Length: 587
Image (cartoon, rainbow, N blue to C red; front, side, top):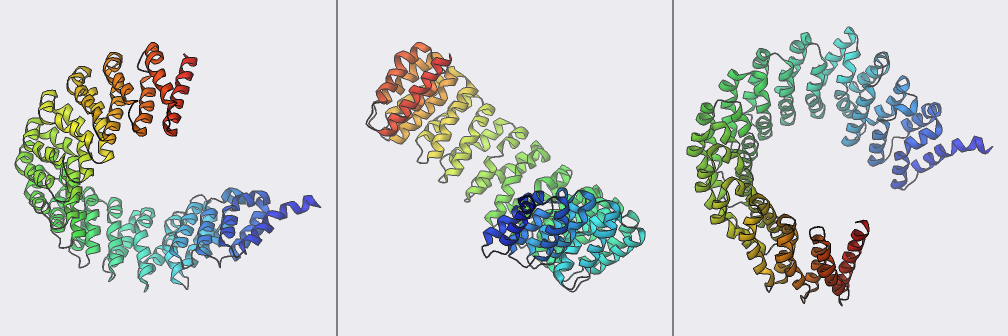
């Protein structure tokens, strides 16, 4: 008897939990569908579990979402692709619910299943499902249908294909804007499966109808699909059908449509070719760069370097650069920030002379912008300009502004400067660095913000690696060791951190003669935080120094710290002693 009852148990639990008032129990049972299906076996999953799920659809959206997701990967549990069609009914029901995210997930799962189904099963089961949804009484079914055509179409007969194209065309002329929106957003996917003979005749007619839509939410989705359609058409067809629409939309009355054009315009340049780009797309782009809506200018400004790359330097200087100058003093800080994030990339495109004459003044004005993000975006891309104009000119024109930013009131700006210093040092060379930036690097070790002090310590290590231990011994170590007696314990901790980072670069001799004595001395500090950091630093020095130094100097210091009144100091000291013990045993 028990052998008979056991397989029944999981389905009984599922049914009970799915009807439970507690949503968490219902969710858990849905997420365990695969386990339950395995327990039931393929046959009973098809005959009992799937029909049960088809009927049980009046539930919480979260549960329905989980069900839609689970069913998308359920083919192995129903007996493979030959039985995949049994999964369609519950997902068809989920395609009609009110909650958008449930419908989207159901469509995604249907696409996943449909792409694995056999051709004859698609004709027998999947295409009828698409037609039923497209003719659905509720708009939700028709919205979902639009996302399934690209799976259904390739397997259909010629007669069915004609019918599917006609149905899609009707969906694009629906009264409900939500259905037209879905048809517009899925048009690119559907077009990619349609034969080229019908692409110009049927699909482009649908496209042109949608471009005339009175809802801006539909028109902006048409814009989003333009690059996809453009790649499917021959360049001359793209110029005839897509280009006039985009140029027209660049002056659309809705700013959302113009915003979408600003985002997509660059993608179209490849599809239409160089000449139409120069004559039609560049004027449209200039128009968008001067749009009266800040959001549109932000989108357009973010593409300025990409756009310049596909133009000749002369055209970029003539048409785009005047707009860039205007944007650098735009009233919106977000427009200036978007411009600052890409403008440095224009230097290699325009060449040395134009960069020096035209771009450098813009860089300088953005480096002095009152909004920290603008300054940050310029600093982080300085190397692109250096490659074009050379370090001499860069140091003369931009370095004073960089030095000024090193003391910026926003700590993130200071942090960006610190992180750029090693790169700048390698470009400037040791002599120039000592003159202009050496003092700054020491100054940051005593910054009020921890992240700056930590970055400054890392910076010293990278500089020592760049210029070598001899240079570091002359220019870094003496100044670092001077600060070890600073009255503020936070700065003393930073010095310990700097020592632990510098020691591996400086090598055995300098570590033993200069750095280790300072660390040992700091173990007598009155602040517990310093003492347990001493324990950590001593441990980091063990691999660098000789065995004798560990025994004579490091271990006695840790033993002494191990008897400290403070519990944290004792803990780190004992950790250090144990680590040394393990190292000794392993060696």
